[in-house]
Image (cartoon, rainbow, N blue to C red; front, side, top):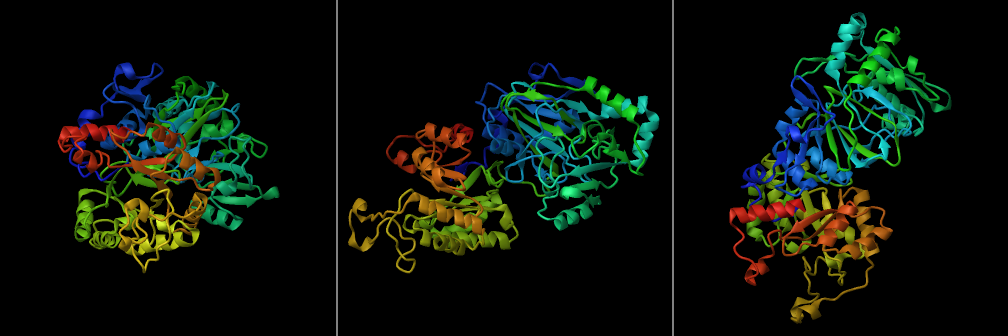
Length: 607
C-alpha cells in the first residue's frame, strides 16, 4: 500500500494498459480444458514476461479489467489464474475482491469449515481426505445461493485432491434428452433437502457442519429464527441433533443473465454423498411435494458427470474463479496435506469501489492500496485537501497525533460526509499513538483524543508510531507533545528526548483492548523491524495487522518485506518515491516525470 502518492490517479489507465499485461492464449490453456460453444472451459490466465508476478500486481490488473473478467467467467464458466505467486488467503482475498463482487457469509452450507480471513475466506470442506465430494452448485439447497465462488490452493495434495469442474448446461441437456419425464418433474416440483445436523462440528463427515455454525447461532432459539427466515422446517432430536427440511427450491433454473437452463442443484451430491452416522443419502433429497426422486436417473446422471468433468491438478498459488450459475464443482480424495481456501459472492457491489483495489487484512477488513498521507500538509489547507482527495477518488487517509493537523483533517472528513461525497464506512481512517502515551493508562486516552479531533466514532487502523517510549506529557501541557520533553530548554535534539522504560508488551496489550472495545477495527505498528515484530508476536493475542515503514527503491527492506508477507502482516510503504531529503542531497533527480513515476509505482505496488 502506498501513502502520499498524488500521481496515483492520473496515469492509472495508462499504467494498467501498458505495464500490467497478462496472457491468455491457446498456448496458456490447460491440456485438460474442454470447449463449450466455442469457449474454453476453464479459461486460464498466466503472467506475461513483462512484469514480475505477485498478488498486488494481479489485483491491480484484475481491478482494471474487472468487468471484462466477470463477463469471461460467465461465458467460460471458470477462470484459472496460475503462476502469480499467491501465498496466503489474505492475498487471495485482495485479488478476488478486486473483481467488484459482493462478498456473502457462508450461512446454510453443509460442510465443516474454519473461518480464515474474517467472514470472507474459509477453508474448503474439512471432511476426511478419503471422502469424495460429489458434483454440486455451491449452497444450491439455500434460497439465495452465491453467484460466484473462488478457490485458492495454498498447499496442493501429494496425490489427488483436484477440484473437478462441470458445465451445468451440458448436464441439463443430457438430462432432458435421456430422462425427459424426470427432467419435467424436477422443473415442475422443485426439490427439498433433508439433513440431520449435530450440535458440534463433526470433522469425520463431509456434511458434519453443526447447526450452530450452519446458522451462525449460539442457541436453539437463534437457529430457529434463522430457519424461519429461510423457510426451513425442523425437528429437534436426541443429543441436540437437528433435523431440517429446506423450503422447496428449484432444481432446474434459468441463468438470470442468459436465460439458459442449468441443472442448478445439489441433488446428485445429496443422493450419493450425504452419508454419515446421522444421515441416509437415499432420504437426503425429495421432490418439492415430498415424493421420492428417480434413483436410477440420478445414478445415470452421476455417471455422465464423471465422464464430462474437467479435472486438473492444483498448483501452489492457483486461484480459481467459478461462476456458480453455470458451473458445478466437486472434490477428489487425496493423500498428504492439502489446504485450499474458498470465498463466496453474490452479485456485484451496488456501490462501485473507487481509485484502486484493496488489500485484505486477517480481520477481513479491506484497506485501499493507495492512500493519502497527511504529514506536513499545512493546517489551513487540510480541509480542502481532504475534500478534493475524496472527489478525486481517495478513500484512505493516514493521520497521526504528531502531524498536528488532525482537527483540520477532521473538518475535511466531516465536510466530505455532510456533502454526501462519501459515507463514513467508505473511508479508511488511520491514526497513530505517539511515543509519550505508551504506558497502558495513557493509550486509550490518546486514541480517544485522535478520534475526537478527527470527528469519528471509530478508527479503521491505529498504529504505534515508533518503538520508542518517552516521558508522558499531559494534553493540557502541550499537544502534540513532539519529540522534545521541554522545548523551552532549547537542548540539542538528542538530549531533549527523555525516554522511559515501558515494555512493548504493555503498550501492545493496551492496543488490543482498544480493538476489543470496538474503538478501533485494526491495530498495527510503524517503523518496526523484524526483531521488534517478533517481540510483539511472542506475547500478543492479536497480531499486528499492519506495519508501516519507509519503502522505495533506495530503501528496499527486502528482509522485512519477506518477514511480513510470511507472517500475514500487511506492509504499508511511505515516501514511496524517496524521501524529499534524498532530492535535497542530490541522490535522485526530478521524480515527477510520468514514466519515472510509473516505473517507481510499478516497483512499489509489486512489492
